[in-house]
Image 1 (cartoon, chains in turn green, red):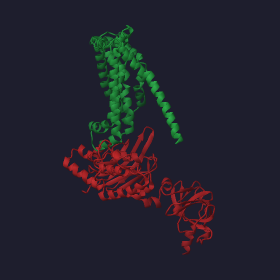
Image 2 (cartoon, rainbow over the protein chains, first blue to last red):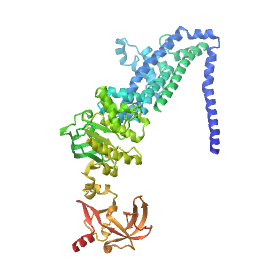
Image 3 (cartoon, rainbow over the protein chains, first blue to last red):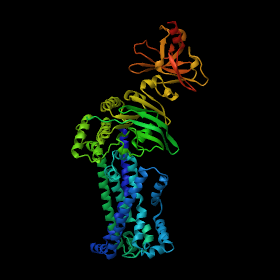
Image 4 (cartoon, chains in turn yellow, brown):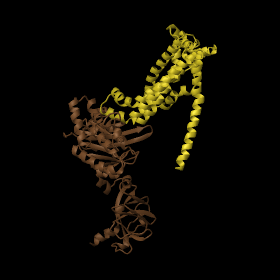
Length: 273
Length: 358
């Protein structure tokens, strides 16, 4: 009983610390964003949100996120599959490289692409001849977004696939199942929730990406400005209502993602249990 | 149950390495159709590798695998007519018991009706009727093993391979499942090979035992053969509850052979007498001191110190009780001597003299 009481005290102290921490670092700023966004009344909020450039920025963000998620899902599946199901030389190196974007500053990622595809690169004339522009254009933004988010899906999948082992796949293969049947009936049901969860994380990160995109975008209003860049631009121009109103759009995206995440986690748990 | 054809298996000069680790060294073996064979050896001795090569899950570096006299090295595992039971069972955890058993048939595009009747037949065989809608996670260890067994049998294989089939089950049910599996396999008459590191399991379940060690086959034969005439030092030490004795020549009535010889004494080679008991070969018995007494339920194991060696012996529950520290007479009937040129069984010379007298 005594230890339980002690545990109770510790429990409440920890809960209080967490709540205060979250309140200071998360809830307060969120409230501040909303209150600033609505400072000049609802009509100016709506005006700021429906501004042509704000809408374009939001659409570009969604577009970059969409491409990043699709490409990273495919890449993430392949990468984690080959890391978990096969043994080969350089496997450790490969899995370390997958983690690289997490440790490298996004600014550096942006600069890498400038060096690779910019005017000073030997690739530039070739791409230019083909009419492909990467730097200061939408492809560059998508490229940067893919780079910073590609570990998210494989990082979710690798532990699940490793825990599963290869026995079930081997058993199915011995019974004559082909690779597609094995993936569809045995591997996919197992990684389904982890994959969706990885997609959600990847999307969340893609929408908020600032650094790498900032280097590559060139800040062309209405053309290469994503939502985070647009917010920065408004803020630098002392348009606080506009900046915070646009932030609230990003916030709504984030909340949708958060809700999806909770639902997915619950579903995944239920199915496993 | 329809009568299954059972295939014979032959391995010729098989070598297999994983990186620098040589898992199989010149493996040669023949298994007749319909036999139930155990691959017995310590972990890392290469027994699972042999099983996986027969199944086509690993490719040998050199040598030939023959099933029914045909080389199958280039035949994929799924076309070798093999059922495989994995150590972890590898049941498909997102499929019901029914779907698990039906999987192999559906993959082979067997008509739905036939699948249904075959699955029901197998469920009945393994005594798991009524569990078809359960998921593997909702089954006990024993049930899981039975389902894995049924799943492997569903497509009518001619060879059944089982990798450590009892390793993941608790002791009590393990004994039950052993006899169940033996009965099942004998009834089906299917050629079966199972891997185990437990000699009791191998002895109880298998017709023949193949002993592996460090990638080699040490000896194969029936349990009785392995017990009575082990051919290699490893088999002598591995089979039975053996104690190694360096100074075997200090035992009475055993004389020194070549220089670097080691004696091996098993509990069944030894008899213990209290000093008050009558002893037939008193001149040939050694003096020992009881160091430990372990109650084994149906018998008593006694550890006796003789010439610095701790020898195990078995005493009946009905014998007069011993005490720790008590001085006893120990008569050693025979022991194995491991020399440079193999293994010999040496009888106590008192027995020989006696037989001459008689």
